[in-house]
Length: 121
Image (cartoon, rainbow, N blue to C red; front, top):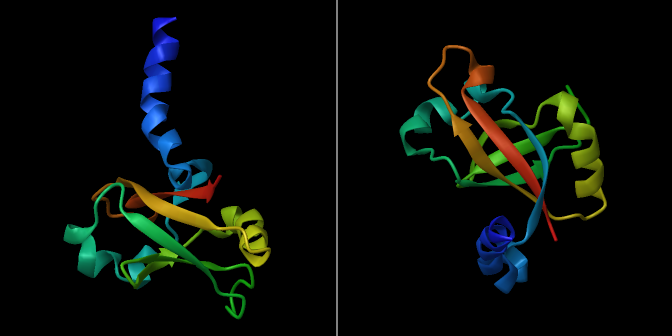
């Protein structure tokens, strides 16, 4: 019974503001970060920062491309392996948003930034 109450008390503040309720859709690495603003803004990035997702249907490499934007700057893309259902949801008008889930100083760009994508409830 006590663990239920702890869980309820953690959810209660979010439940009080329905706009803050969201469902985690995917957690994945950020693709293409070596080509965009991650390097020049690394010190300003913080775990928990809000990310905007923007479709890029005219992308010549991937018509399902989804840009990942932080404070108006493109950080990279949702990886191709994750973007089909997200692109379809965005194309249907579903509101999706992201956040920085993990930051790691690593020589492999695929290991530096992990993002989470949420759908509002």
